[in-house]
Image (cartoon, rainbow over all chains, first blue to last red; front, side, top):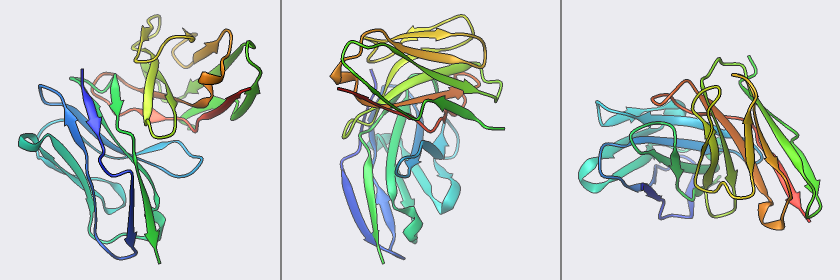
Length: 113
Length: 112
């Protein structure tokens, strides 16, 4: 069975600083990978996804992520964080499909003015 | 186009009571899902329906039942609620096995 680890429970950055959120997965073949964002009291919104092809994927709101098979990682990055990026971020993996997703425990992002 | 809708938004139950959480999508998606979200644990899949007429267990199905009423609607039933079922419940849908899942706004359930 697949698994996902988000090592950072909480990250604090200053507005305008760069951001990297870590995600490591465990799955034998090429996984389906997702990053979702959740604002307080809201549902989950897709930021970006990787199914195959180019390992650097661009998403909404200026986010990008890079799939590194050798490191079993799919880290999320943004060059300059905005106050509105404060939210909880979830990495998810699908084993061979986008059906039975396994989610990480999430990383809470705080943005300082 | 409302996407995925869930009712109710909030619910408080007493131990042993039953209730049904409703989910509907207007995107003509084939597959629908129910998750629960607990602090520090991310989302965990309860049940899913790959297509109309089929349902399958996810990671944490005990204490729940589901019904795929038609292509649009997928309900989650708690027959005898327990405090351990206090959680936020999310419904999601997608076209199929290679498509992104789209989530509803959630139902916050408290079982006393």
